[in-house]
Picture (cartoon, rainbow, N blue to C red):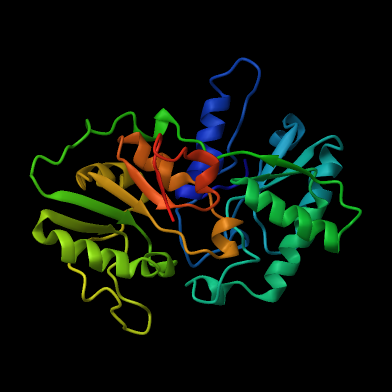
Length: 306
């Protein structure tokens, strides 16, 4: 696994899988290096040296999504090990990122072009949802019909390594129902898609309900405050290392995972938030859309809202 960052993507898609593979007798995995997460950087901005001995040792090398030409890496590796297999892992849909997403200005047409070219050169492409893989399979077939890349669905891995030392489940001991959401603000449009429902909840239940938001202060880049009419309890974002502890401290009774009906969600997101809430047995209400429908059985393991 080449140079994952210490964030959700790096942990669920590389670090946790490597740790779990090393528990087995049939597989072994090595992480070349782990970087401190910086949202202003892309993979190519990090210094990611790889020991030549790893190239000779490995059967597979797993790369993150790269938006610069990966040809030099492929050639260099295969000069040392002609049998090595290249895997590129995708956990979001970069080609369908909407304009209102905060990361949209960072992703140029050239980035998308180079990413697709890189994917076409891979032996295997792994993805965090079936919809994500379907999207890129169609795109590669259209632009690179002779690509032989194999698509493999690899869900995000929730491992005990991530939460085994977390304090026991914190329960809400008050009579007030705490309803929570986690959102970085990058995709604030998801929360804004249910603003009217949130207003209705507060109007109907008043002080019997508290709305809790982790990771976003409710302010848009232009200074707008679209949630100003809704009395949220705001909690600052934390590093991934502290995330499970912080989630536990929220003492949520119900978690909401709203998804706007756009390709970036239905053919690009995973159901990782559902799994994270499940660690603490927090009941989830989420949009009746993929990828949620890949994991949740309505009224059995969660509620799928229309």
